[in-house]
Amino acid sequence: MAIPGGQLKRGNLIVVSAPSGAGKTTLCRMLCDRIDGIEHSVSFTTRTPREGEQNDIDYSFIDVDEFREMINRNEFLEWAEVHGNYYGTSRIRIDEKRGSGADIIMDIDTQGARQLMEKLADATYIFVLPPSPEELESRLRGRGTESEEVISMRLRKAREEISDFDRYEYVIINDSLEQAVEELRCIVQARRYGISSIDHDRIKEIFLKEDV
Ligand code: 5GP
Image (cartoon, rainbow, N blue to C red; front, side, top):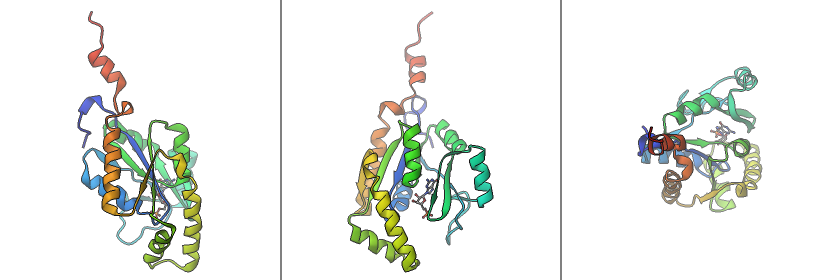
């Protein structure tokens, strides 16, 4: 669905990063259910689907050879290796969605976000923090599915990711999920009035055309 404001608007790119366990996937999903005109970017990944995950809805699941071919064909806007698997955002998918005027929310790791920061200055960069290190650890353990070794690897990686927080424009502390979604919604809504959300050429064409 298009953004209210129609043909004068351009879709925004909203980039959300967080250490694993901070709740960003849930936050992004809740936001998309709550407001119109925003779509979740579907990434490509080489990891195996988790129970309940659907191909081309949660991720597009491909094998390592296919992923490498996509890298060679320069089809990714950004890509990274996270926890031993590859993840990447398709350039074409983003261009198509943006062309429709919708905002796009991307849930990607800090390595991918760094790549985007270098090329897309007008995207909105948001970092989600857990309320405390203790809470992060308990959320990671709470899933109950991972071994001790995997948990300590995730904690190390979380530390590494958190060290990037000051590269982002916004920080949301996910203490209460409800409040965090509301904060995310406010940021996305506010960006829709920003100068980068306006189709400058279209405005010039419609309002500033010289009379002949
Ligand atoms: P998970 O496998 O738990 O869904 O995701 C693991 C990590 O990969 C998360 O931090 C997630 O944000 C990140 N991720 C998901 N898609 C992409 C992507 O397209 N690019 C990058 N760089 N990271 C991604």
